[in-house]
Image 1: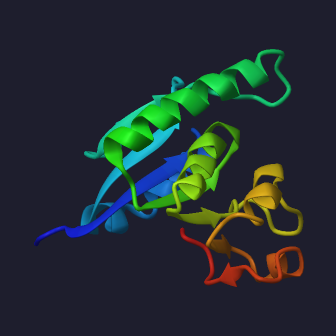
Image 2: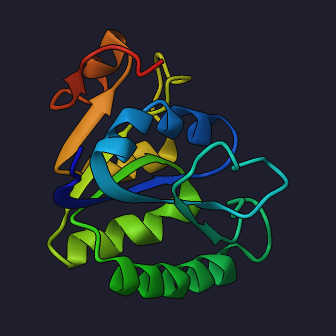
Image 3: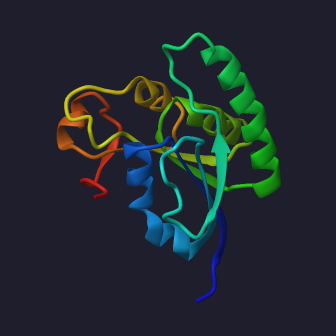
Length: 156
């Protein structure tokens, strides 16, 4: 089976966000793609795809701004090396630089709001809702918060 010519970046922080992005593995196999995630003790060896790592970012820690700046430059380097046509992101903070770089590069941005959010938005989701070319929610109740979102059900 030949790969399509579109290149996809699957971006997700560790833990549940990474588990959600891995539910899209059939897309990873259909298209030329790579993963972007945080460097943690969490096992990301569940894929045969190329994986790039960013600094883990916690918005409450003292070094948050410095880590975001470092992640911006790392993401920029990855962006120019890989040249993705589409960034698919399940969040959160560490992935935002790649999302903004893609938008500045006039590439498509697809954001999938967390499955864990049933009645309230994430901070990253509220921000990405303004910029995403496609914004998906996994619960119909979230359409009240994101009226222009697309609801197709959960990705699990």
